[in-house]
Length: 109
Image (cartoon, rainbow, N blue to C red; front, side, top):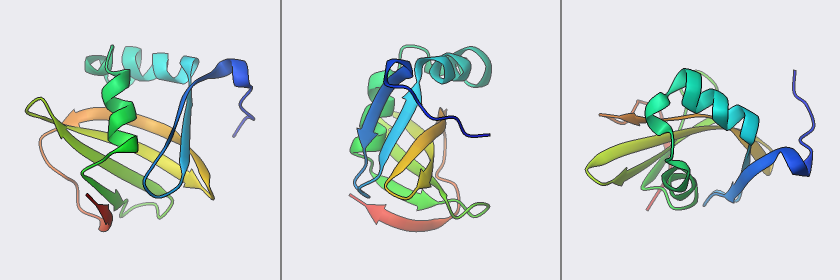
């Protein structure tokens, strides 16, 4: 169930090259770094950069509204996964990976 995001809950929001504004709450960011991908703790800035200035963006093969933003930085490949809902959206997760997943390329640097 999707809840409306109150401004005070908003942790950050970033506009992507696709013109979509991706948002995340502090509570959900904490969930990502405590449960899903602990290695991302303290890496908010690279996640923001990955969304704002990706090297490549791909559409998920499983869900046409999910996009994977990739950015190579510091000899690592970062992926920020976001759901798009019109001109807005939200961060699903972010992680370090060793390869770009399959999917339709929708944007490149």
